[in-house]
Image 1 (tube, rainbow, N blue to C red):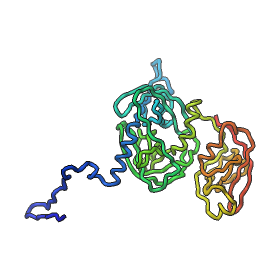
Image 2 (cartoon, rainbow, N blue to C red):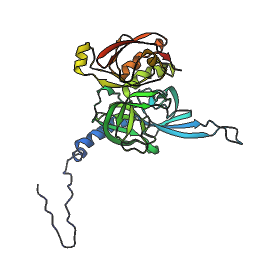
Image 3 (cartoon, rainbow, N blue to C red):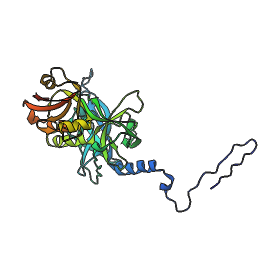
Length: 343
């Protein structure tokens, strides 16, 4: 198809805008990228909520009988049809009262069913009819460069959509509790205050992360807790309201193992857990673990990623002397570690 462009003296060149033909749909005007984002938002959007929190102030203002309340909030998403909502722990920190607003404008009071500051995750419970639950995906299948979409309420602007790619996997991020959160997803999907607790989804609308933080002043540096980590702790939050776990005092990230290493040591997995930091005086330090070691087995179980290690560091293992197998350089070492409890 040719387009005639006429240049008139004293006038700008003009090109007629392409008009959709009769019978064409809106999708015809969208490229593949746009269609992927739109369909993902259509899938997860009805489950994304706005979380509003009245936080009790710690001090007692002079001349008043009651402490003032501070307002805060963030985002979340319904993950069960009976009203359980996943959000960030720091969103509901010191909450006096919590409310949840659905995309259709309905607003309900919410109870904090469980809270785990060490993974920055919390579960809320609302009682409401006709809820739509988000579909949870598998964050272990993510790849750097993959399209991801964030939906949330930055600065209170409800149901805001941003898109980007997975910038990196296996990052470490320090939670407000001081614990180093492992296996964090880094993305360049723009996040702002208020996005916290909202879902990070794939092009098919599957939730693969819970948006948790951004680097203030940075550009395109945003982070999310993997949904696989969330699925590990949700049962404990629903059952006990908290997660009591053992710990060994290390910061870790997932790493692939060289094929020759896998073959030489006859390992059942092609990945392990790289030790990136060791807490001074902690159980791992006393056991002789060092930065740069790669954990491949713990308590007799194969460890192929940080989630495997977290799954094994249960309350029942506090105080037990447990074997840990690590790759250090060209050697495979057997260490004995005694996990502590963390209250």
